[in-house]
Amino acid sequence: MMKALLRQVGTVAVLDLSGKITIGEGDVVLRDKVHELLDAGKNQILLNMDKVTYMDSAGIGELVACYKRAREKGGTVRLLKPSGKVYDLLQLTKLEEVFDTFREEQEALKSF
Amino acid sequence: MMKALLRQVGTVAVLDLSGKITIGEGDVVLRDKVHELLDAGKNQILLNMDKVTYMDSAGIGELVACYKRAREKGGTVRLLKPSGKVYDLLQLTKLEEVFDTFREEQEALKSF
Amino acid sequence: MAAGTSVKLVIPSEVRLVELVHTVAEKLSEIVGLDQEDGLNAALAVREALINAIVHGNRSDPALDVEVTLVASAEGLEARVVDRGRGFDPGATPDPTVGENRLRTSGRGLLLIRAFVDDVKFRYLEGRGMEVTLIKTHRPPRGAGEDRSYEPVVPRRTGR
Amino acid sequence: MAAGTSVKLVIPSEVRLVELVHTVAEKLSEIVGLDQEDGLNAALAVREALINAIVHGNRSDPALDVEVTLVASAEGLEARVVDRGRGFDPGATPDPTVGENRLRTSGRGLLLIRAFVDDVKFRYLEGRGMEVTLIKTHRPPRGAGEDRSYEPVVPRRTGR
Ligand SMILES: Nc1ncnc2c1ncn2[C@@H]1O[C@H](COP(=O)(O)OP(=O)(O)O)[C@@H](O)[C@H]1O
Ligand SMILES: Nc1ncnc2c1ncn2[C@@H]1O[C@H](COP(=O)(O)OP(=O)(O)O)[C@@H](O)[C@H]1O
Image (cartoon, rainbow over all chains, first blue to last red; front, side, top):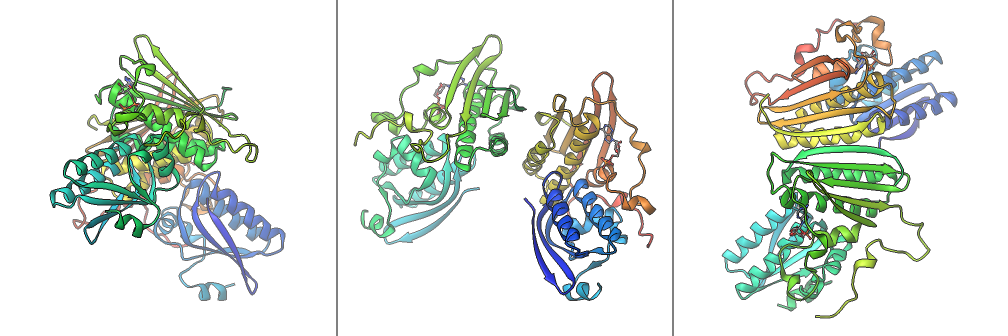
């Protein structure tokens, strides 16, 4: 099961994700967590992907859905440290062109 | 895969086992390790079962085979800290009546 | 047992595939909500029935398949293991827990199967092979009597 | 691909069973000797083909089954996924990597499948359903050219 732990750093909600983002499991957790944040008016979201092992197409689709929902609310979703398989998938799907992506947390936080 | 690490304590060869003792995997490791010991003239053998998660009937059969082989060579195989599923299995199969079994390593070592 | 989610696996008679079927049985046990211990017990029973089907039923001939059907339902897990062999009489196997039998290096599979599930049925399918059906039901909620599922078949301790 | 160890799984169209099949595909990849990355890639491709068979082919009707056959051989792993649906034209799906398509929340399964295995074949079986065949072969030993298996289908970076 994917885990998502929330840290609020200034105006930015950082979700430390770990595990895999896959159909019926991780994608649901991600959707619920981001919904919660947006409902609470927190629309500056940084997803820490460092400990995400992989995603399937449903998980990737949910990532995009979260991005779009945050944008609708005037916020955004950015990505921290996608690596290994996750990085490959962002490249393959060209989502690296959609998501602002950072290697360093400080830099990511400053970007909001 | 089951692991088996050897410690020689005085005259006793202690094998620290970890993982499961099952058909085609753990049972083969156990057989090979005990063969090695017996070939080297070490027939006082203590199997540390503390980190063995479970066994199937093939693994249990191999345990008995090792016992018999050691006895043939004038030695024996004793068990240290069988717990959880392994303990249940020894009870169920009545092998607790065959194997001398110990909760404490010091006590086990003294018994040889 | 009522209709449920049925997963069928067909494998050649190769012992190296036992682990894979064990894993599927364990995952399905989790899906039906068996707790971890019961799930391991169910998977161990499936494992033993499968090893028997491969080794005794099909004599480890990889050209002969074993069919494992796992049915996950509200009641628990049901597993059917069917081989291509000549069958056997499960009542005629020696008790591995008595006397010198305890020192035999085989003969404990059926004991484990019976201990780890709630019901076992053996049936010879004419022209097909042996069918062994295992049923693992949910335990009654903890508290009322703490019945460990294998208790009924563990004979009293007799000493050495 | 040459004859090998063939494992067949038949499951109802339930998404909660995808994980189970993924695990079997990964374990078989290990058995055929694919390295961890290739094993994960093969399993991810099987996962996507299976999700499509469940969701699009069988419209998530649990009464309709999906048959997954995994063949482990010296060359690698072959997977066939067969549903009960009306089939589709795999050439007619939009490219999810261009323009606004990148913001769609679906439509990436075939891209992943093509990226993660070495060969994909689509065939409609009259009166049966769609058959998707995936082939993952062993990589040539490291060193000579370091070809990451999905490279051929990753189009050049075009900027934003
Ligand atoms: N599927 C089967 N087909 C034929 N014979 C079987 C089958 N399962 C069990 N048997 C017989 O029952 C005996 C007892 O089986 P078991 O208790 O599992 O112990 P083991 O397999 O170690 O011999 C076997 O030795 C075999 O003769
Ligand atoms: N097994 C199938 N049966 C019918 N249609 C399919 C099947 N697999 C894929 N398709 C069609 O191809 C389209 C693209 O599939 P895919 O790239 O996997 O993305 P997604 O499944 O997210 O839509 C699907 O939307 C569907 O219309």
